[in-house]
Length: 82
Image (cartoon, rainbow, N blue to C red; front, side, top):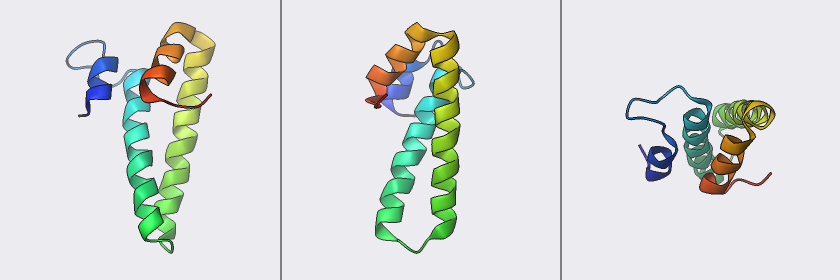
């Protein structure tokens, strides 16, 4: 668990909130991006990267639509562009 995710968590056992899921997906995306830079022919990982990016985008759209304050907080803490 990274420190950014700990900052976003609402309580100790919070693993399912949209904010925490976005944080976990961001870590996964960064790891897969580094992996793909080393192994350019690994198509299975690139498909996983695209799926993770699309899922994070959907979660961010949900937050933006329903909880704008939490959306702004997540964007600033995770240094995401939007």
